[in-house]
Length: 584
Image (cartoon, rainbow, N blue to C red; front, side, top):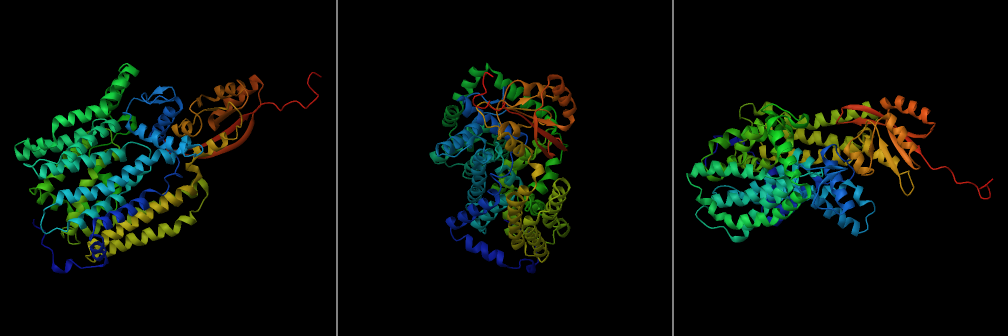
């Protein structure tokens, strides 16, 4: 392995190298440190952050309806089939919520934190799994402190903004990334040890990961692994190395994991699930920007500098080193893991940041290796300018959230300011240390800045911005309906989070319909957006009804990108007659 020609003064030692030396002395020490980093990065806000419209509460509500109905085959959101993704994540979420209920947790079905625990577990698995993947990829490579690379790669994943976001969302992507990482790590060992049979247990692990990934999000892993296999087989001019995976065993394992539910959903929906998931979801994403998520080619590359912060700028600096060493087997494997799938994602018109997340562990490993190999330093082209991104992100987050809170809530985020200030100081220090040619210490400071920023944003700041919490505040008003059969309607504000936090039978209507709804019976509540109140009031006058205005809830709808003003109207049963007055 070669390395760039760097002046000897560029390898200044600092406390960062000393810390890595301490952590690499045992796997237990390194893994414990990574586990703690992951908890600090991912746990704050896991239960206090509101359900984040629109995808997350759709998943959570469908899981809730499984618990309500006892039907764990079909996937539904209210009365509509949710036939876009397979059932795996719903089963994981229902298992967690059911366990919480058995432990006596009240209102477990409407506590979003429980639905997020599979994603949290998936994200932690990604951090620890990246450590394992680095050990596999670098096994036998001389002149490399393998445990040091492995720890740093895992720490980059713990600090990555995108994984931190997905760890807090009750969706598929953190779990899918964990399954993909496990499968790709076993695939790496099969490739690097080609000519030798894998232990049976590893082959089983590979196919179990493949089967679970299919149940979680369909065939995406087939694309990532399949493209990597194609590139590597062309490189080797042979596919014989795949025999180590025991293909026939694999087909049986995958079939046992996936076929029972696929057959059951086929029977249950008459094939509608496959028509919806393949014809209307997967192909739609390939043809056009589905659900307004269009983006041009190159969008993922631009977003990468935010989603993989703070390590992204180090990756960019190290890019030439990756390509220079492409003939080394393990580097070739990582590039085959990353580049073909990344190009496919860039070409597809539908762009969502989390699509490329399964590729990030390979990027983290390459970046950690290049950093410790001396390929990331201040003398690289544009390095001094590019690393301004290290402090820019926490500064932008601090300013942006502070302005938003003041504009929409008149709030000053005083409790969050110490954390914001510390994150900015650490990131500025990281930048300064990089310019002093102490890149390893700079990377560790960047990781620390990311952890502090995560705690400050998700653990403190978001709780101080009530305008972002429209659905939780409306749900709190709905809980004042203390009767046997409460019913709720809403007009213009129809986000899935409101369905999840209130009732599955939430009635979606307009202003006139809300008035008629209140007249249908006692113990009714309507959420009427300001633009619907004229029609609502006119209809109330026609039908002779005068519900009480309980409160007004004002907040910012992120999906609509606008401020909403919602009146909460309550129609309660008439007061019981006083004793002795009946019949008079």
